[in-house]
Length: 281
Image (tube, rainbow, N blue to C red; front, side, top):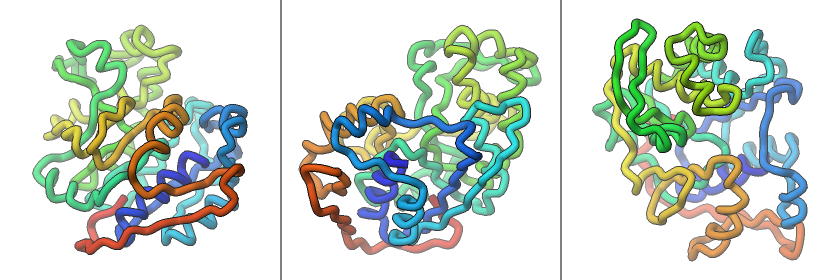
C-alpha cells in the first residue's frame, strides 16, 4: 500500500483529470506481497494502512473497487491469480498499471500512439534472460518472441476484461503442467511463480493478437534510464530506485516520510487534458 500511495500521487501530479479505477484485493490478507516493511521503517518511510490509502484515493478522485474475500480456489496463495477481477472491467481501452510504478508525465497520449494495436507491453524479465524461447501455444503452434510483462499494459478492444476471464485457467494449467509450456515455466522461475506473465503471453499468442512493445520513452521496467513516462520498478527494486534515483531527480516530489520531514505535501501539476469516456487507467 505504501508503493501504491506513491504510484497514485505521481499519476495524479501529471494526470489530474484522467479517470482512475483501483482494484483493491484485500482477500483477508491471504495472497498479498509487498516490500520489506522492516527496511521501509528503517529508512523513515511512513507505512500506509488501508484506511489511509482509501483516504488518499478519495482526495485524488480515484475510484475504488474492493474485494474482501476472493476465491482463488486451487490458486489460493498465488497473488497474481487475483487478476481474475479484471473480468469485471467495463472499459474498452485501459492502461493497466501495477502499484510498484512511478508516473512522470501525461500518459493520455499513449491511447493515441498505440490505438492501432490490440495491446502494448514491455518484455518480461525471464524473457530478457531467455530471448530466443520458442513458445508452444495451447493448440500446439510454435512462435519465437520475447514474452510480455503484465505489470504495465495498454489494452484496446476490451481485452483486459477478456484476459481476466481466462487468466485463472492459464495459470492453473501451467502450475499443473497440463499446458505444453508447463515444464518450461518451472525451469525459468522458482515454483512457477512467473506463470501469470507467461499466461498473458499465451493469451496473446492463442488469439493471434496484434501487439507492439512500448517505446522506452513511454514505459521502462526494472532499470531507470531517464526520460520515460511510466517507470515500473518491479517490487523488489522499489526501495533501491526510490532512494538512489527518485529522491535525487530534479522534479517535484511527493513526500511521505515519518522523519525528518514533518510536513507532508501533495503537489498537482495543472495540465490541459483531452477527456475521453472510453479511456481509463
